[in-house]
Amino acid sequence: MGIEIERKFLVIGEAWKLHDAGEYISQGYLNRDPARTVRVRIKGEQAWLTVKGQSIGASRAEFEYEVPLRDAEQMLALCDGPRVEKIRRQVPFGGMNWELDEFLGDNAGLVVAEIELSSPDQQFDLPPWLGQEVTEETRYFNSQLATHPFSSW
Image 1: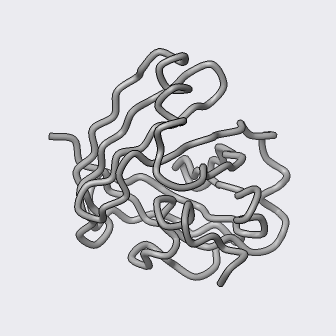
Image 2: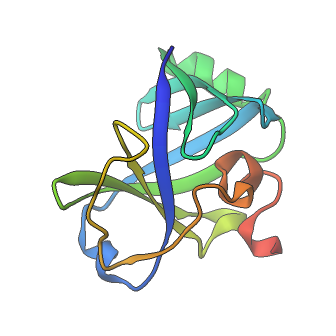
Image 3: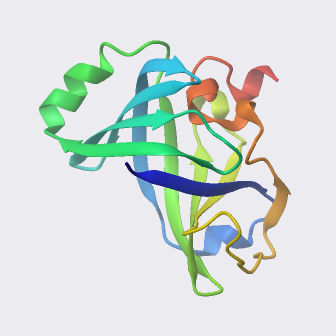
């Protein structure tokens, strides 16, 4: 079984924008049940189907499979609720890779940083552009942002 251990933080300031230009991501949810989300994601010319289990702290089961782009485009049409669109930047800091998601559309104005860890207690340096930790706040889950966008909070 695949396990994802991920911590999530709000991003403050503008310094993070100095890094790579990022890649556009479009994703939708075939199932948004908190116990088992099923996501379709397109990034560039690649696509994935991802199944995630319920979060327990910063950890949850995760299974991700690359799928043909045309299949993913058709699956997106079957998704429950609007798509989540964002620009993802890869930002190295303190020997770790951070993923910064700048959300678009109804979630514009929200910028979230995620770091994947090898264990829940792994230590890491905090970049100066990190704000409040939101790892366990479900409203920041992409599956929730699809139907309860940042602009409606």
